[in-house]
Length: 274
Image (cartoon, rainbow, N blue to C red; front, side, top):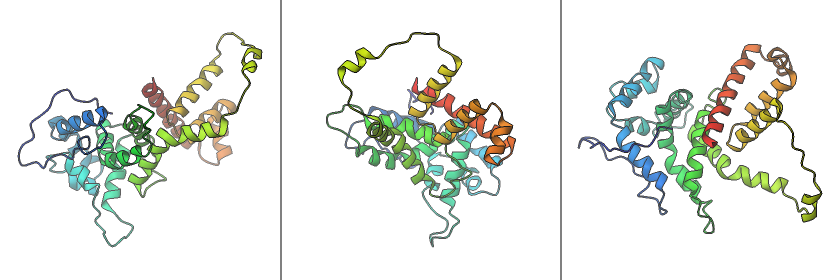
């Protein structure tokens, strides 16, 4: 995610006022305040606008190219993700197409991911409030926003091409709140205190396999999709992308591409968690 800006830029009067989420929230959130300040600066940043206009070359003859061609404010892109060119309910929707293109760009372009996050913020705020506990001082927004960032960066744009926004919000909420609750419910058991004293502790050198298992554990907790972790485990177990390709009935190139994406997802997740 783009680092929060410490400076602000005066917005010209001809630009509409940016959508402010922190002020509208019933709960104070330092993270939302920083995101609002960041977006106020970023949306008219010359460097950011140049980057966004360049997306027209990557997506010619696409609704995104039309939006960014003469872009003067990043909020124009965010607004374009909220309107449909086919209100009759057909299968072609420019808002989904634009959002999908941004998610695809977000794999390697933080600015695209930041615009997607800005689009998702209202829904993320509503969902996060449901997990607010009066006995817990943890800010749910601070939990769901990093999860949303991981959901954006790891979204499967090849298979999930409709209902992009709702799918991303659902993924983020699951990673931030529901996964931990489900894991706890399925694994907790009562153990007598004497059991801890009776369990021997073996202190030995850490092997490469031990480190691999620990990395995957951290990546799972940070929200990396199970399909990525399962592939990495299978590759370590089998030892050959070719064999895994035959087992999965796909080409070795498909396995290598999936492997590279999975490794990048794990790297990003572990770095954020650290």
